[in-house]
Length: 259
Image 1 (cartoon, rainbow, N blue to C red):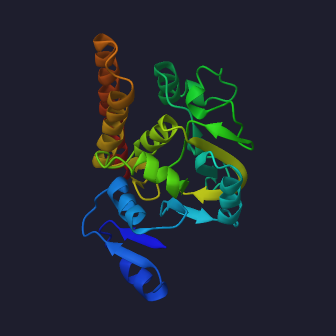
Image 2 (image 1 turned 60 degrees about the vertical axis):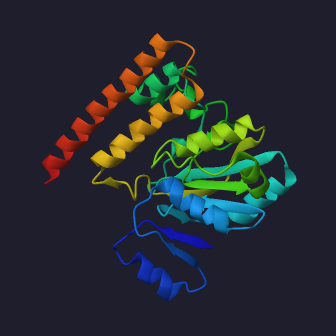
């Protein structure tokens, strides 16, 4: 097992060294972000499978044995994710996603697509064709828990380190699909995801994380969608940065109210 420390100062390094001496601990000395940290461990690992796991996750059952067995049964699966639940038991819908369409993204961020009973074209980003308790091929699973096949990683490549945090998991899934590997969601087993446990304070993103999230959206669009219609591209980029302005202002106001 590899633990990569992005320059924490909360006793994590000391705890890992004292309680888990067999763990390969990598101290980066800086907050290099999600991609750099995970790529470091992926380069060091040599198993047939690798699990990308966030520090804000908690195992509640033996998930790995089942999922590895599922991947061994299906050689076309390059990546698999499980059902993610929040601490209150509710489903984390980011556990399974579709690559966003403009309408699907707009509906998701305005809340229309997140409503119960929302029409498929509005709920598109949440991959409604595969149910919460089902299993099947999806466009993307969540970066908090990604079990990947080494052969597929060698074929696709590592995370794009131009992302700091946010959207890099969607990017990786897109490249897996481009290379012909299936991305699979299987709800047979579950893991707790303390959503935002390492990036959100008092329920709100800081400015750096907010900027990174929206910059990631713009990068994902530029890499995979842009170039067909310059005017449409300008409209998408304008919408992304307008959303950033609104989100940053709301977070700042909420944080001030909590001081």
